Amino acid sequence: MLSKKYRLTKNGSFSYLYAHGVRVPAKLIKLNFVLNKSGVKIGFSVNNKIGKAVVRNKVKRRMRAIMRRYIDRIKPCQAVFIASVGVDQLSYASLCKQMHKCLVKAELLDEKEE
Image (cartoon, rainbow, N blue to C red; front, side):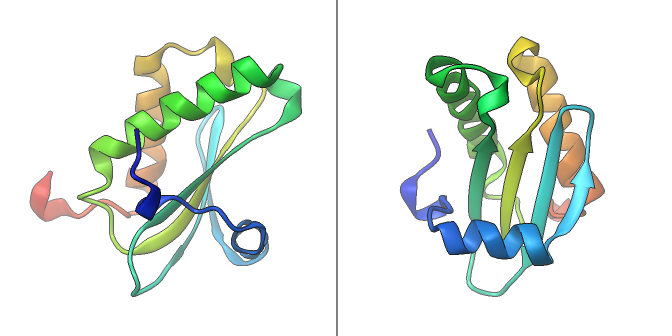
């Protein structure tokens, strides 16, 4: 589970990222991010179209667990991962690959620790 100090929780923060963030797409995951100096904050957005609450929560839990692996290597930023329809059908490994792909495309991972 991703520690609470790294989570993006405020509605205004999500709105700011949607309006001003840089967008990086993968197949079923999109990443919006803004670089900052204060540290890492990560949010997760899973739409109602993906499924009922149990399914959406499962997707968010998986995404948080995946980000826990990368949290020490991410440059200071605010970011939100947006799940698209069909993400609930992905295996854990496939979801991990797509999220890693987004982070690499966005150049958010520090190369020194990879």
